[in-house]
Length: 480
Image (cartoon, rainbow, N blue to C red; front, top):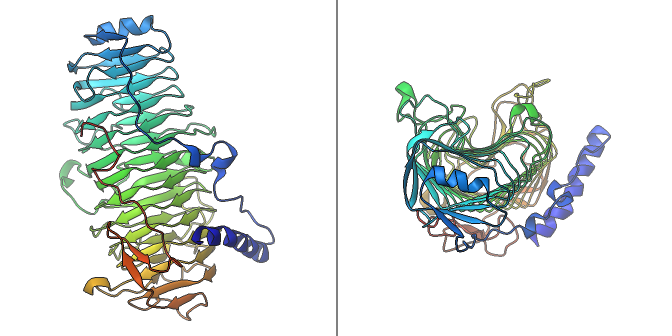
């Protein structure tokens, strides 16, 4: 019923735009449906076949690849290999570890996947750092899959050096990164980045990975908390220069734990991306729609026990924010909260703050959070323009915790054209006056799932029960 309500109220927001501006810019919540069906995307582990050839050195592997045919399964013998510079260019091959997790790449190394329809599986990077700033794994071809690999504390001793760990390079399409574990990053540089040097779509699929133990550590600031430095994202999709075009990347079923790199755990910088079914636990940051429009943030679980943590931060237009659960976002900062709707600059540059407008924020639950909704975050010159708030649930003061206002407005930067439909709050005041119709104080009866999630007993408002991922879930490499 809740999803039906979300769909039904999308035209209401479009109607609001027509009334106030004379036209609607709304183009629909999920653009991927025009190109592929996200509901049909497979997220199961890859079934590793029996290898057709076993090689015992990187040189032998390189020579074997020169004559390999599509469908060949080439296994690298268990062991440790240092200072590896390998390019996998043979289309259709599978390069696997003899035993998944028992092939170790050390020293200054990079593996490039430049062909198409290639599978790379079972490798562990450790005790060194990438040869290329693009990362330990650099995917420059399309239709490839990197699966069941691990990058563990693969850091340069000079932490100011910028190294990504894995790159999906410019103009690549339909690549998958799945069931991998990325942990212990200390040097600057996004863990996983989707590069875009033009407006072409990407259609990548990033799923069932673990991102954990990423700390902001640099120079004299080693061990500093309060990470607001650029360049320490766990995932970034796009750059400012191409942010007004669409990537069509799907990010789902990933587990983020103690990702303390910066405020943007995920940095969205392109359009028509979907972020769904991810779990964020004990992280200092938020899922941030930094640039780009028409993105979907659906059914994500945020368990926040860090003063610098939060839920979702929204910039730009036409986003769909539905069925998310945020608990424990107690920061009082100007940029963090349960759901933050950012103010914007006048005539922003591509790397500036664009107008937040035509948003659909429905069926979300925010529990024990200081500023469940933050209007006008980042304190730019102009307030957010328009948003529909439908069937959201805010509850504070549970289990004896502090009561908070449900909404905080930065100065005069309130949402200018809000539509409120059956939203409920309890455990503090609303925070805005006069109280609008459609946002009511009501002690909605709650039940608590085994995961700890609070759910409306009658299912009428807030998020439905979500899967709270952890290291025992079907995420990460098989050899964590």
